[in-house]
Length: 193
Image 1: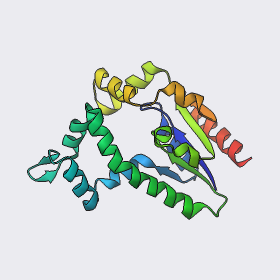
Image 2 (image 1 turned 135 degrees about the vertical axis):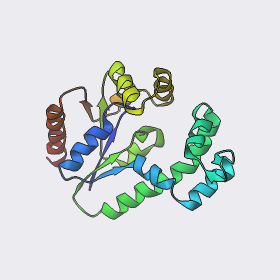
Image 3 (image 1 turned 60 degrees about the horizontal axis):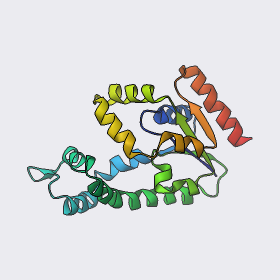
Image 4 (image 1 turned 90 degrees about the vertical axis):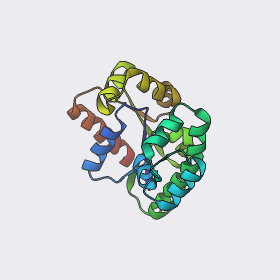
């Protein structure tokens, strides 16, 4: 098994590149999707509400409220992450165990790859990159949020410069889709070569 991680800051094109690999027939494990599924697990919701009882509306868990609670409070965000990250690590290790004996090329889509220390599990790191102005425009347009909101998110993440420096490959995503596909094919050829 060859495990290649796709990482990069918000709005840099990580999901777009991951979708190209999927369309080319390669499995892509999406850490964000794992988190989304986690919020449907009653046991996890119970633990979250034990730690954040104010994240309720009419007695039911309210994910939007939770997001507002932790967004501007570093300690509360760290507490929530301490609940989420062990689950994610178990998922990643399960994927690695399940695929360890085959020769397949697998991709891991993980924005917080370095922050979680998951780079040590990967054979290659691909960082998507785009200029900061384009990055901010993409997120504002996609998520319908203010520039201030986007900048807060960016400032909470490891710098894009650091992610680029730690990469085996850097893919510039502010290009036409056909050129992005060419980059994906070059990566696949390099990994399979």
